[in-house]
Length: 238
Image 1 (cartoon, rainbow, N blue to C red):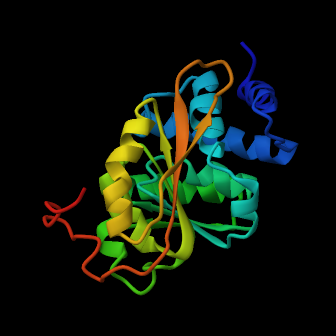
Image 2 (cartoon, rainbow, N blue to C red):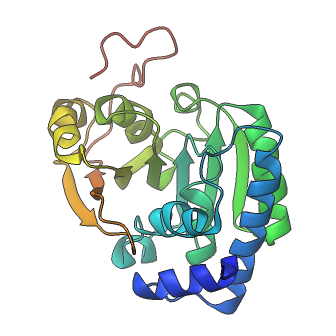
């Protein structure tokens, strides 16, 4: 079997992604540490090289949009887990400062160590819940882009993410085959939370025939400070 670097380089080329040798080396460090740490804690169910390359790294990079990212300075990955999609985006778009936010401290320890080992200087790792962080001056309306993968369905996810982006900022949600249904479900929440229409951009991963898309919402106006509802007060979401 080809090693991880060869798999990633080949699959990235198929996906139209131009990864440098230095970036591939950084991702190899990520892969090695992910597999190692996963023996001690539950970070991911996908650890074989092909899956890490395609279903984690390339999947994360499908969120990249050249015009949107060129103008952005600050991005937050909400519920980042093992650092996806935030770490791949931090590698691919090094001018953007990326905040990796997760509610589990032991995952934040992994994120801190792996980003340091990768030599990433444009990331920070914080232990927080989005519904609490969005009520702080440090995070509320502080980001150009908020991204999230496999955290919640759109009505709930927009409650977590739209308060974190500035007016004119964008939420990007990486979704699977139910993305059309989720876009419809999230329309009312987007309106209530200051967002515009939900747009879907279908994406394809090399070697797979499943259905995936990026759902995007631009924040059009400021929203009441009561949003997002704090933990235990979510009954009106969605």
